[in-house]
Image 1 (cartoon, rainbow, N blue to C red):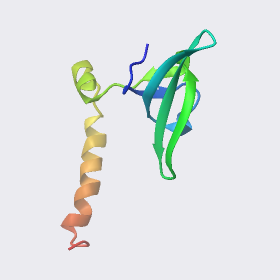
Image 2: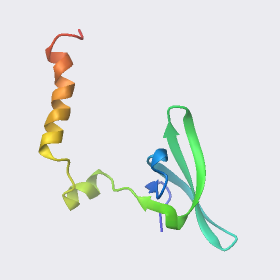
Image 3: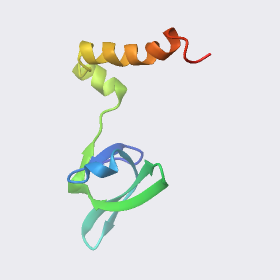
Image 4: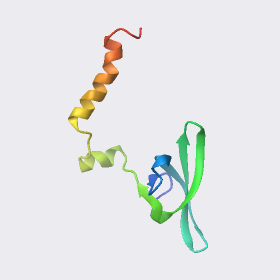
Length: 91
């Protein structure tokens, strides 16, 4: 069962991204969670049944599991940040 303040994804709704559980309540015999999502147009609050929620591991959980980005991807991301600075494009 998801906890309040836990970060989750919604099965079948990848467009929403990652949200945070605000409240879990029983309504009409079914547990539902209120989840807030941050977007470019502000915050969006939606309610979903608990069986649609997928917990998103935080940084420490990923480290314990050994869930890392491939080294090549990490290197390319770092180079992408360094190129503008090294090229003198930005002061």
